[in-house]
Length: 495
Image 1: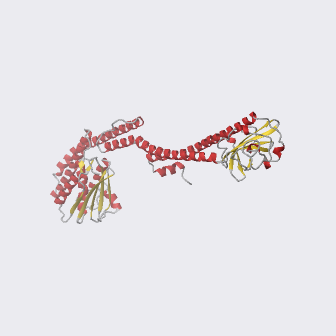
Image 2: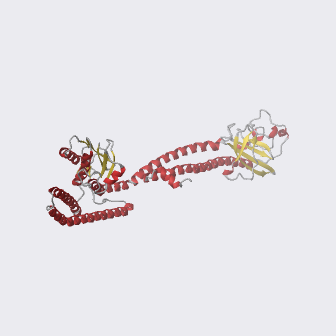
Image 3: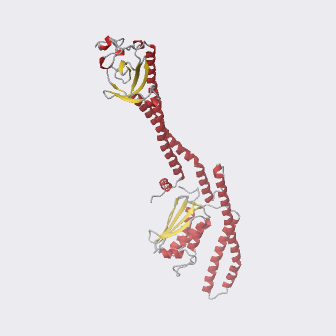
């Protein structure tokens, strides 16, 4: 079963609003322009047909007026029965104004018509006229010479409307357009036929249609260009809105500001309300963290005092280390919660500088020899995070990589799609998919013989998510574990 037309159209334009607008408008233009051309061609055909019919009707009227103003029709005399002379002239009794079929003459003289009017004076042009009396041709145009005309009988005495141009042809097959009238005079039936070549209709129509088609094609191109400009101009406020939202996400603004079109004002108001609500929820959550941290300070101090009385000393030192670690974590989160509760703006951290300093320090003070850190970070790579949070995330990942590396830890950074991407990998044994899922859980460790508490990777992932980033773990090309940390970038980061 084929999908509906709207689904096929959506798949064709790729879900882009700009593509939808341009495609739908262009489709309308591509349909409307040919239809307009067909309508105009039909109208022009009617105009040209009416012009040709009017020209023929004018000749019909002139011939009938000449007959009405001329002498009465008389029966053929002895001279007319004998047929015309071969050298008969164009006027008078023996000219073309008095010939009948078979060379016989009727008793009608049209020499009072005066000179033949163009284009009926040029032979073989298709512009002909003839007058018949009682079915016998008594007069014809100079252009007709002696061609035989096979003309249909008129339906009415009057020629009728212009669209009733009849069709006929000469004995040589020349296509003609015909207007005819039939009436009685002096008791005899008179018929007047006037013809025009079929090209008199088709040639002007062809020229006009070609001119209109070229004009409509140019109009279609201009309309499509205008549509592209209009769509770009019309969607520009949406691009501005996207840039404003990106600035809010990166911490450069606290809300969407600036004038907005009437159609977007309600949307901008809802977005600002959502941003304010999200900020309030964040402050409230961090305030709860601060309260929790304050609540843990007293029990922690009590545990620290009790640890002083533990023996043997090795066990006491281990407990003191745990207390110091807990105290450091509590103070760190308390400081972050206090900053958020006071409405402090999100800070920007130079990833290149922080990562370089951490790599140099860890490489210098680690007790394992032969493991080096290779840093490959571009200058000026800035992330929209707090510097201390960045140090904690990078420190956890670098410390984990150094513990498991054989000889090399690689630290790389780049900017892609408004994100700072940091890659930390080692050449150790790496982790399987199940092991990666395990180490992402707080307090879970794979090797209890190694120092640590199993909170480094979960805390790093949590901090990254708080800033709208993420932490992914996988297999490194160097053979060990690869940690990919993505953080929101700021405008200060190089492209």
